[in-house]
Length: 538
Image (cartoon, rainbow, N blue to C red):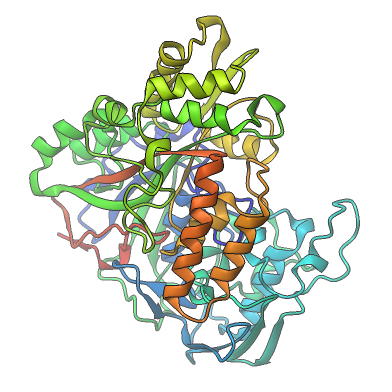
């Protein structure tokens, strides 16, 4: 996930700690209480400190604990949430005014300084926060993140942040950026209270156990690692997202199938993702409680371009054209997913049908021709994926079979490298993979810039570099109108598609479910996920 040419991913959005111990807590009858609360299931978050996570499972919790300056509707439209206004006359200097009277759950007032402190903390390279580069468009970011990682930063504060008064924050960017209001919807930009910082000015790791937010809920007790985290309505909350329930619990599961079993048995009230193998049964058993939804999540197959074996674009194109996306969709996802025809999902403005053209179309003959032109492939082809979902191994096995059948690779050449979900994202960030790897991107916010700059821009995981792509993104980001911006985003997409450093595979379809105890359950396609405050409990 990202929108700034960031090195972090939404898998980023999908990388989490999922330990076997989690299941000890998940078999009980949590979904059968009648106290006005409900339960929801997901994989274990990695962190709960804003700025230190890009995991969608962490966002599940953070969206209840924090109100960002700007919110997103279900349709993907921005609206002022904690902000009274977000304005700019030149798209470079932005003035943010807060709604008055807001408080954190511990009673501290929410001020402009609360945001400045939080953003400085996340942007400081020495803190090694996962969402660090989401702040890279703010002036002064480079000073907090010297190229020499061993060098001490020149300062601990972003020069582009100016606290004008308690309710006014002025933000100066390094360049014009017309998508800035969308960026402010991302969970990393939530505020932090003074209580979050220790005597040394740093946020201790223990803050993860009981984060203090400005949102509609607060933590009840503390985060029970690999088990659950309970949220209850915050007595200090004055915002527009007042809870219609008495709280909810996020239960951690190490197995998506076990979570579905608990939903089916009434021990769980909300499950956002039902395993693909169980979807036909879920449709039949749940009826109108089965919840399909459009999503912006795309699976990709990335290449470690620092390895000379993968630097030939013809090789990458050959692999793309040897993959039968539609056959995998039918075999693994019951035909419910959408084979990718673009680097962007259909729900994102800027998506063009068949933008990827023949390069995303199954064509074994052309694939073999390009493969031969590239000189074939020597050595071991290692395929990397996490254990977060059983479908990852299923479709990766089909991909391997296609590579053998269509390109002539042998059994001895292909090896699978399944990595625990808790370690997978760190492995990719450190460039430890030695072959093609599964990655996905879940919309941080509904903008083509979020996908293109985040996945293919400066700092991408493939180490891909293209000056023309970067120039097109810059023109799009600084365009004075949306139509012009889209033209340049599409141009950037065409450049990336033709070089194919990362292969788009398919767009997900959300397939969740709810128990009979709850209603008004809505799950968005954005980082907000479940709109928990709207859920009503019988």
